[in-house]
Length: 375
Ligand code: SF4
Image (cartoon, rainbow, N blue to C red; front, side, top):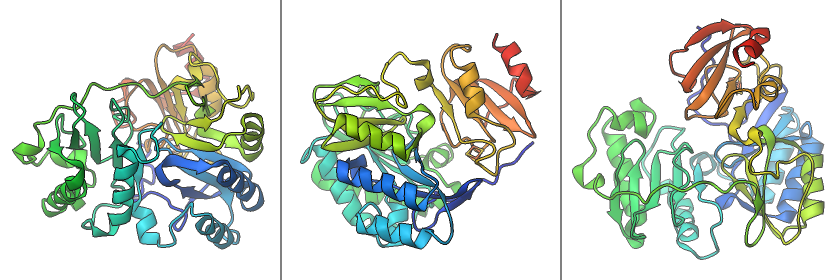
């Protein structure tokens, strides 16, 4: 079994991760939203201090690729100056917050994010990968996005806090939202959460207090697919990978006031203009939207197989969702897919209806044999 170098932390701008093409410098724009000027600044920094490539992560983060150790201090200073990264490394590492897209200034999602971002330091010590989802639109849409503590609405529009892995949550009010989160996080820490690592794993072993499992979340909705919305345009980013040049081209075409980085590797452009830039996905029925593939070989040092070229060849051949992962770490998608291919020692293991951690249905398939499996 190819055991990847799974790290118990997520890269940040202060603590970047080495990849096959240099350092990955990750930032998490506040509530996923940036002015067009800030997006231009990111593109400029990616060109000047990285290799010109930018990733969207599955949790609505941005990564500048190909940064050298020498260039990193200048990049970090610039990102802090642009307020895209917190100057305090500890706060930046904790600010692992993903929000439902299409929020509006002053609405519940915005208010909760502000309180949480302001009071992160008040939470107890938690495992480094701990994430928070503020999924408080009309219907939850972030269930497939990794997070440990989830703010959601119930069917009547009330607010609840749900431990990831629990089907139901704790009915709370907005004024007590942070205190409730603090209480749940403290329970997690005090009952061995540091050893469990993630809340979902923890609640499968340790019973949650009963009153935290009463409120039923509203039925889940769908994240908006590419296309026009009332106030803008959503575009998909194939595999979440784009060049700084393509991003600048998109901005020139759309001229948006703001850009939101959405989960599922889409961008929401707050603009009235139609956009057709060929580097992006505009058709909501495009099969590539259902395909996840990490950077793979040679960009990632953990990979022994190429991923995105394989994914492009298989797109449209296998029914449903496809995930091609360079190794068992599964960076590109944490949930299950109809077909998952996991690189191992230069070949692929195939998991049907599962994820990278599940027992494969077939092992050791060479790249050339994949087209026979999916004719
Ligand atoms: S899943 Fe892909 S990007 Fe992540 S460590 Fe493995 S090969 Fe690298």
